[in-house]
Amino acid sequence: MTNILTETIERNTNTNNIWKGSIFESLTQESSDTRGRWGEDFLQTLIKDVTDFEVEWDGDSNTSNECGSIYDILVNLNRTEAKTAMVGYDKKRQKQTNTWQHENIYEENKWDKLLLLDIEPNGFYITCINHNDMCFGDERHPILKKKSTRHLSAWKFDTSNAVLKRGIENGYSTYVFVDDFKNGTYKEQLREYFERHFV
Image 1: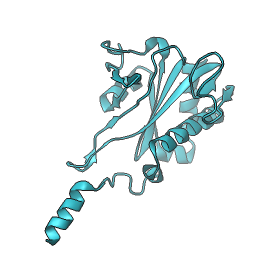
Image 2: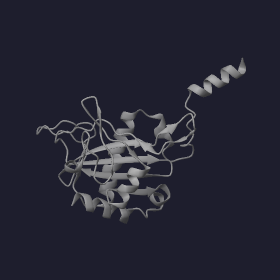
Image 3: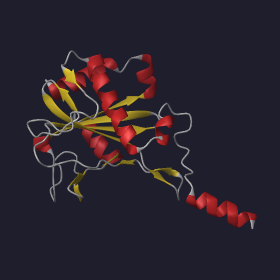
C-alpha cells in the first residue's frame, strides 16, 4: 500500500526541481498574473536603469487607454505589450522543455512593440517584435520561423530554444546570465539592445 501511495503522489504532484536554488525560484509559487506583473515591473525598471528613455508604467491601470490601445509600458512613446513566461517542465521526463508560452496577444493595432521575457533558472531572454512584423494566423515569422495560434479572442506565440537562437542571431533577442546580472556586466549589452529597438 505504501508503494501505491508514494507512486500516485509522485505521478500527480509537481516534481519540478529545476528552479531549486535559482534566483527565480520564488516566482514559481506565484500565479501567472503575479508573474506577469513582476515581468512588466522588471522590464520597465531595467529599461530605465540602462537607458535615458522616457518610460511610463502604471501597473494594471494603463491596460485600457482613451485612444483604445491596450499595452503595458510606454517606452519612448512606443506602446509596449510585455509577456513573461517561465521555461516549461516535462514531469514525465523530469526535465525542462526549453519552451515558453505567451498568451493573449491581440492582433488589433493596440500596441507598437511586443517584449517577451523568457526565464530559465540561469538567466533570461528578451525578445522584441514590432507589431508590423508579428505573424497572425497561418504565416510564419520570416526570421523566427514561428506561427501564432488562436487563443480565445487573441493569439498565442510560443518560443523555444530554436526560436530564441534565431532571434539572437538576427538581433530580435538577447540573453542575460544571472551571474552577469549580479556583477553588472549586462548593462552595456542591454543598453545597446534597447536602443536598437526603441530609438
